[in-house]
Image 1: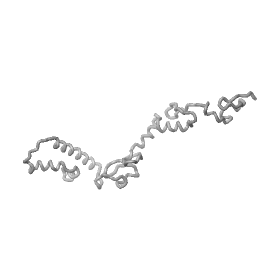
Image 2 (image 1 turned 135 degrees about the horizontal axis):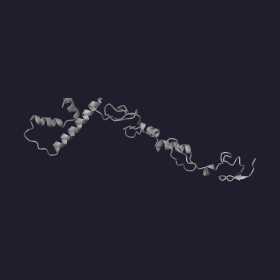
Image 3 (image 1 turned 90 degrees about the vertical axis):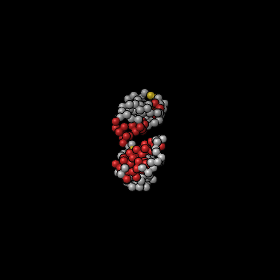
Image 4 (image 1 turned 180 degrees about the vertical axis):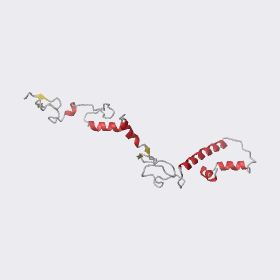
Length: 180
């Protein structure tokens, strides 16, 4: 048995060799001296911890935000589909597309009445939505070409060509319904 007095360098109390360790005498000042840098179990990089912080909490936050390992990055990238309702910050695992306006929403705002839908009022298939988008793009090209100073004869207002030009400025949905 060794009863030599040893002084704790943290709390400065006297202990024997059996109780000099911080854990053995429940040292209240151990956090000041017992500084260890934890290592992330996923990416094996040291995680800086300030004095007085719990290492487990800091490592957990590192895994949630900064960890470069594959499992941590895959977990972060799962919820990438953000709701487009103004003010909503919810993200979903998969896209929830509105049938009418074809925008992505969370499960809470997926119905047209829940997100103040700007759609036409009737569901449109994906192919129909793509066709409307193409028609809008082509009609905007025609309108910009005619408004950019393209020469038009003044006396040909009754010709079929001018009738097709007036039809081209109509909304794309009408053009699709008319078969143009």
